[in-house]
Length: 317
Ligand code: GLU
Image 1 (cartoon, helix red, strand yellow):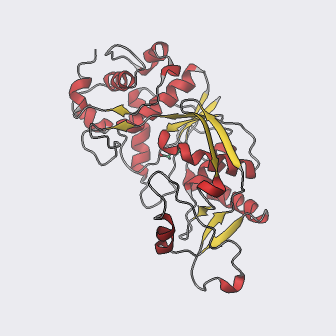
Image 2 (cartoon, protein in one colour; image 1 turned 90 degrees about the vertical axis):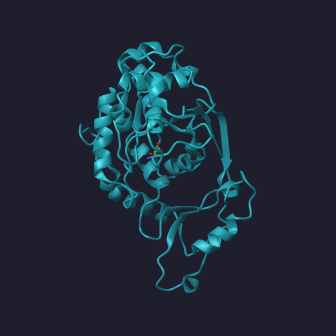
Image 3 (cartoon, protein in one colour; image 1 turned 60 degrees about the horizontal axis):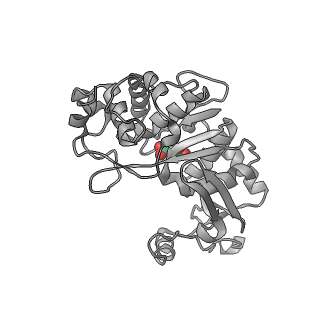
């Protein structure tokens, strides 16, 4: 088993990230697998190396360790996406050679227009406007984004928590962007190359990425990666108004909680308790929790986090 932590270093770790990282760690350590840390910093404007450093320090303080990563080395490096552009370029060239990539000149206004039609809950489907555009009709001096032409085919997989999933990308997503007009590689391409090239066998992440999975399955297949991946999407953390916790909300980063006098074992105990994975309000080390948690008990409902969780965490002993 090879699994990964894949943080985007765009802020300090908050409870939502810790929940997912904790479950990924529990899943891997219970199975005695290998855990990889990969820093996903392709969003160059928002990513900062201080946040990557802080991620590593905070995870260690929580007692959550990994086996390969930027600080540990390993035979699948580099473990930082901004050092892997050569691999994304190679992948893109392969897809181009196979005739699957085309330039798209659609501007934001047009994309908004075509995506404003669907009702809530429907997908925003790209209509293939630039597919098959002749050389002459391509606007001069405008740099295009690059799209992958998707097949008319149902892609299916079974998620360990949310069950059977399927998507016909041509109807529900449309041709999607693999490199943006500003030259940045898209998340979907980078993550597919990395999960393939790093021989990842298990992906555990927030359920907000459930709908990205079919695109990644397709990309990995087109790129010739054969390692089958078991996907486990997990519920998200919400506040009492039902909003997803974000890096912008106060009092929810690990650093704020520690400053408030909360201990690592209390943070972990609180999350496992809220997620229904332990029955008592208990605080202990991540290692000790390994014996106590039945990972398969994880539910599908999002977790509601108290308004000021620090006070509640302090009641965990
Ligand atoms: N880097 C992504 C994030 O922090 C996670 C991507 C993934 O797990 O596939 O949201």
